[in-house]
Image 1 (cartoon, each protein chain N blue to C red):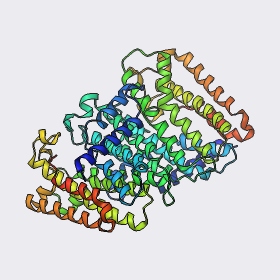
Image 2 (cartoon, each protein chain N blue to C red):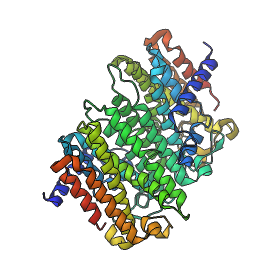
Image 3 (tube, each protein chain N blue to C red):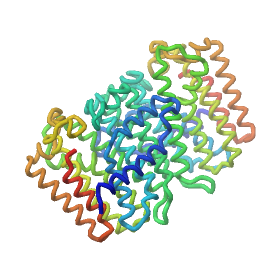
Image 4 (cartoon, rainbow over the protein chains, first blue to last red):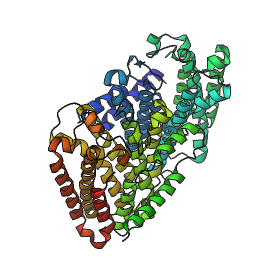
Amino acid sequence: MDFSRYWSERQKKVEAALNKALPAAATKPATIHKAMRYSLFAGGKRLRPIITLAAAEVINGKYENAIPSACAVECIHTYSLIHDDLPCMDDDDLRRGKPTSHKVFGEGMAVLAGDALLTIAFEIVAATRPTSRYSSADFVKEVAFSGGSLGLIAGQVADLEGEGKKTSAAQLRYIHERKTAALITSSIRLGAMSSNATEKQLAALTDFGQSLGLAFQVIDDILDITQTSEQLGKSAGKDLKAQKATYPSVLGMKKAQAEAARLTARARAALKPFGKNALPLEQIADFLLSRKN
Amino acid sequence: MDFSRYWSERQKKVEAALNKALPAAATKPATIHKAMRYSLFAGGKRLRPIITLAAAEVINGKYENAIPSACAVECIHTYSLIHDDLPCMDDDDLRRGKPTSHKVFGEGMAVLAGDALLTIAFEIVAATRPTSRYSSADFVKEVAFSGGSLGLIAGQVADLEGEGKKTSAAQLRYIHERKTAALITSSIRLGAMSSNATEKQLAALTDFGQSLGLAFQVIDDILDITQTSEQLGKSAGKDLKAQKATYPSVLGMKKAQAEAARLTARARAALKPFGKNALPLEQIADFLLSRKN
């Protein structure tokens, strides 16, 4: 398997589907559609949608059925970045190597661009073809749950409230499970659901997603310290500056690195039942562990 | 028909359903659930959900089937108020007679409370019981469309971009049709859909909603000038202060009042096909025309 070719092919599928799903940049009012597209097409890795497509195939489904879910999770992810970067939140000027939304379009428009991406995510995912086990509404509920006040938003709230305070390893895990792992887990689950996963298959892939999602965030924390802004395409060292709790700051760098490896191994173990079909998901897990940005 | 009793009974049904649909205020992380509830239970009139329930009954359906839609439109409305009130948007300190969300919880939390209400709206509406003509996904798409970048958000964008500029009557109508009438129209349509409305019935009620929604906003513009902050429960005169285009500022007060009456009459005319069943919706239209806040 040529992983980098696999990845870039899937990226292109996702880009094309997102491009089709969003109103054209010239659609009135043009500013909002430009702002939505500016952040959505800023050169993200497309990790979440690609694992959605891979999860659809791990149980012998067609990735095409997972396209609406893939687009929806990327819209949710992008909206959350736009709002996180706002001056009243993390106050960040750089994202994916480009000025953040509010730097380009102003704060009010950035709030609205996030709102619009969040809204369109549900329009897109509602168009999912139902399977015998899952209705279109099940896909909508999955996105709403992982993106909502008990998932992604819960993580952001805890993160915001924890700034400048001493954070325990348990609290940190609480934040990361919600802020990052929840949507990554849903990305996997939605793909599996689009292939009509059995309860058992869905449970195994949920385990995989939770471990992978946590591993991803631990590595993000590590890279924030070890890499430069140029390497990351976003402001490096910002966690330290904001006195944010991170795995390296709470556990120390060595233990954080060991935790990332442990979680990745655990994620891989959850894939055992799927045999050779799991190869793309395994390679994604390895890629995330070894990434440099 | 005892209209004020009808209204307060429906309000109670909506309050109870919203209370049940939202996580308890103590649910961790408590701040976000407190903030969501603070704005959602700040004493709103519940106009949108009440017309949703009324629309379900106008075609002989049960209002109970419209409860998820009713809750969803109120969550969308409340999220839009929270975000509109932010310093980077309309910068308002008072809403429904109470300090706005960002005044109480801070800007970051207010952004997140809006996001969370927007997200939960879709979770709630996805639970709508499908009818023979409408799937649960159709309800989700209706909310996403009227709340999205071609509806509510389009209106807010045009409003934001128009501040301090000369606005034509056509532009003003564009803003109001999206910022206000789109969600009111959807409120009606969702209720009708929950009662399995025919295409013809849905078209008539869409007409009603568009006229009613515009009338509502024209009257809002008028009250902003003629009433005090105490009477309104929100900052009066803020349109003037922000140099916002309004019906009175563009057409003059007399013409604005005539336009409100014309639109209300048009809304009532759209109800003709429903005979006596339309009584509650007619009374709602009259109530909106004569309201003082």
